[in-house]
Length: 474
Ligand code: SAH
Ligand code: SF4
Ligand code: F3S
Image (cartoon, rainbow, N blue to C red; front, side, top):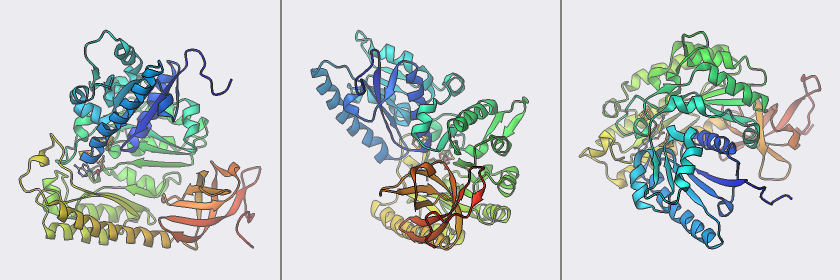
């Protein structure tokens, strides 16, 4: 009967915090657990296993985890009264960074599992379920190659639940050691997956109906995986190969470091229609003094020159970035340098954050921390500038016909939402069968951070585009 549990079936609820790699990892954990008879649920109260896939990047993100553990501990206790056992696992970057502390602070947690141990989840759960154990199970080894080799390929059901777009991790970890950042400690050293593994996974995704793949890595453009020919493949080489997979119309990658932007990758943007004209290229600050203190190992002028080269190769390239305001020692003049850099680049979108001191990172101990009020004021000014640029960027699309990959149903009946090549959300009216197809859309207006338009053409049975004005009036 529907709604009733099959014998042996167990339910897993996963809550994901943080970056896109965590979204990817959460799905892979569900895939691994499927081999043990687990099915995903979005109702924590019905779950036999609750996994919190956590983020350690800023203090707020990490602290939220402890309050959430409290909430799921209550669920666990309520279920216990009804005779059900609930296991709580903490995964992700907080698990890696604070494993023992979690076990100490939160006795309701049965298992702590770092990002490099997800392939061991079934065994770890058996271990954690052993009621005779005196201590929690904490698995925080760095064994990323074993993980990638042993994780199952994505299962079509999980892939399909995400619609026509998918993430695919090609590189994990970071050797850059920016002085503010926990990632080198939580994700470990930079490791690239062998190209053959990535190709197999991408083929699998395409076969399950995925049209757009975003390649993930903390330093994705430093990718240097083993090629099927035994040599090292760059990210560009990998992208050319992935572009040959039938059905994969769109390829993206994130996050790139300015120092690893190879000539071949820039050239790929000029040559490959499947490689979307959008690049997330964080610079963090416009001040050379702060960039040096952050250990970014480039100056602002290097970044601007790089952007010039990228725009020469692909004039319509949309750029996005990350910024930190109030890094220790940041003066008004340093902050103004950041504002000038943003004005110069003209971003399509950006993320910006107040500096958050992270335990164990070099900058956290600096004496010249910036006052909270100063950070807030700078963040507000920077975000206002960035928002203006996003609105300007979106307004420039109005009146144009753009290709939109339709991803899902919109909030209103009959509405669909997709993305332009430049990652702008586009709302149109149309039938649900259009989800998963690329349509030519006339952009009529920009509102908030979204675009609204109508479909100009729709493919016929042979896939040819016809200028059927399905939703455009007249
Ligand atoms: N791998 C990515 C960064 C991942 S973290 C990269 O190299 O760009 C995403 C963003 O969080 C960073 O780009 C940075 O802007 C921000 N961030 C990282 N550590 C931070 C900290 N301690 N305080 C505030 N923001 C931080
Ligand atoms: Fe963190 Fe810097 Fe590595 Fe990005 S490049 S993950 S900001 S250490
Ligand atoms: Fe957060 Fe870890 Fe990603 S710290 S941003 S979940 S790599």
